[in-house]
Amino acid sequence: MKLRSIAHARSGDKGSIANISLIAYDAGAYPRLVRQVTAARVQAWFGSVIDGPVVRYELPTLGALNFVLHGVVGGGVTRTIALDAHGKSLSSALLEMEIPDDELAPG
Image 1 (cartoon, rainbow, N blue to C red):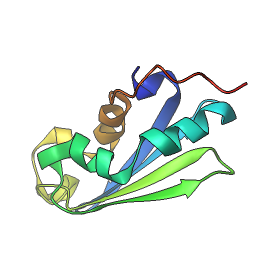
Image 2 (image 1 turned 90 degrees about the vertical axis):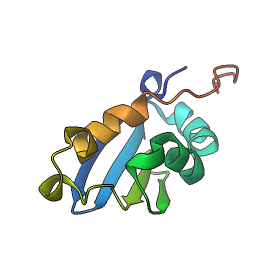
Image 3 (image 1 turned 120 degrees about the vertical axis):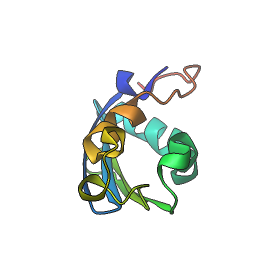
Image 4 (image 1 turned 45 degrees about the horizontal axis):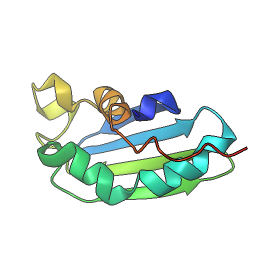
């Protein structure tokens, strides 16, 4: 299943750093996000779009994960002509990530 089926995302960027928040539609999906969407997996998902580390922050009260992507290739919006590197498009790209759908939903 795609992440977009259990979560939505917001993002932005400043220079070569992008920030993506992944927010579960309901509290029951949050533990699944924590298990399945790791910093390493996000870094691998974006591949050559970023050349620095990905840091994940957990926000359980909000049912959200926040990812900070360092080293957006091209230096970010103000330094590249590549529209796909913009922070806003990165959140949509993350929502296309597939996660296993064989887990039973809690409750």
